[in-house]
Length: 390
Image 1 (tube, one colour):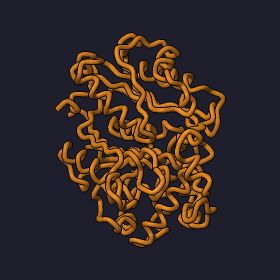
Image 2 (cartoon, one colour):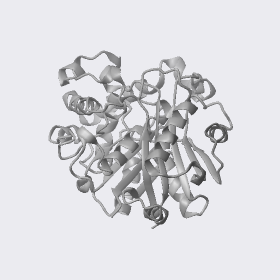
Image 3 (cartoon, one colour):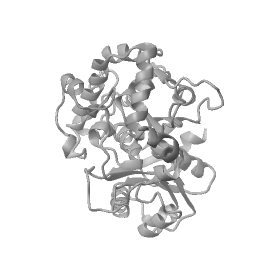
């Protein structure tokens, strides 16, 4: 299978900070330099570049070309992936496709973003005309409504959501690259008492947008072995779905495309949810984690809170969760935020998690969420299964 022929030979991540004076290319250069140093590859060997979107470059029609120029890369394949929070994991999937098609031999996947330029995309979309005037302002409002609908259908135990927040914050305390402002212990009581943002979304449900970047170097398994590399990570399952059930007149917003993408990815990998060793779901809001547990089959729909209460999500538990702290407790690097959880999964499978290293490194599952349009569930859902090279 083509997906399994790819090899992630290196990962890199910068410090995540609340606000920096660095531009996105400076961050990208740091990520690239770290990857070259760790893998022994030369910059001239990189002939493919795949980027996630960036708030800095959102208005740049030549984003990938400009970045290649800034980093001094001469390429045979260059692309920007623009599916929101799914972009980093989606970029990895597209890197494997480019390698399989012979369009490149070594691909640099870069996920970097800063707040240097304001993202005005809302003014150029349906949101400015149809939703913002009614007070539907951004993701907190969307997830607030989604949470209310879930609570109406199934009930919602907020102490269970608090447990997820506490588990991730505990991991951030062990992560030196996490945003310092977020590296403070919290309790379930802290979560329940945190300020309401968009009822019932609380402050401790939500990500804080930061500056930072991460990246992967991906080549073929054959080339990795020719380079003398004995340790790398292999993608073994992938699923992606955009506009899940958009053609249906009535949409259940508590069900997402992860129900399709997750099934496909796990079946491709030959796994069931019970076989997952560590879980790294996209986490812009806590409710999204719990819903993805349901969509991927860890439990039945409506039973997410009960599953959370009976499961140990710490790095020493039976289902380690976002062991870097996730975006919520490490910081969200803008549109590149999904790279935080993806790179952490790779780090764990390399056995380099340090104080938060998980014991079971047979596999890791990473997900992405790409936007949450008005009136239905998130636009794009991706699921990737990774494993160390056998």
